[in-house]
Length: 245
Image (cartoon, rainbow, N blue to C red; front, side, top):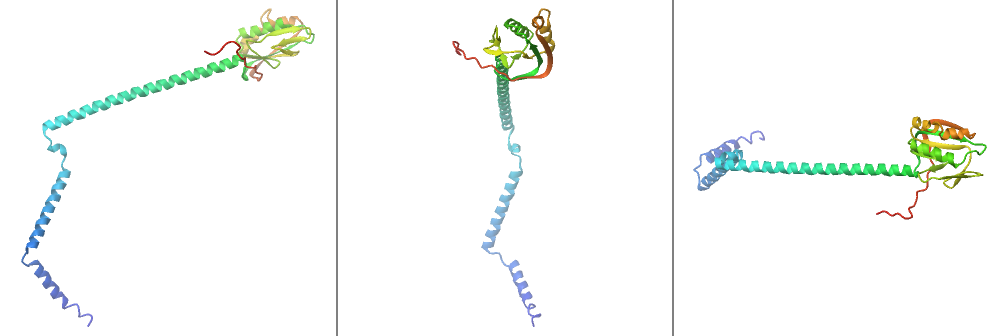
């Protein structure tokens, strides 16, 4: 009985379908049909409008005006680009000038510190060792040696742990030699930074300081160095009268 129960329902269902297809149209059906038609037409129009190039609907005069506007805008953008590039170049030049000025100031400050003897330094140079066991040397030989070294281009000089500067001075008495207020004694060790090939001939020149020291009985030994360390520093001078303007 379960297998035969669906059979009577099929003819009834087909009869309802035929009645719906061939039924006389009512006013509601017509209204629905018109609405569907209008909606379909609107959708088709909108799709076509979206697919249409806007330029195709413009006349020649409008196209010329649009082209002029685009050309003007392009020229404006090119001018703005040129101005920005000029500003960038000016900023880069200013930065380069500031960097160059900063580097020059740093080099000048370093050179001033080296000249004043207020910083430790190292580099190629030579060591001159003077042995005077009999106390035959006086301040004049030391002044002469320092002058020869400066004239030969010595950049830094230390004597027995005392950093020599343009303000350095020597004196001597029966008890020995004094440099910048510090008493020193033999052996006298000169540490000199500079070109050894120039400094040594300046010291060994005829009638120069090395020969005069030997003539007084002192022993003089000069040796070049590839990396000489000068750790002695001079106190920074404090101006007494001058002030920065």
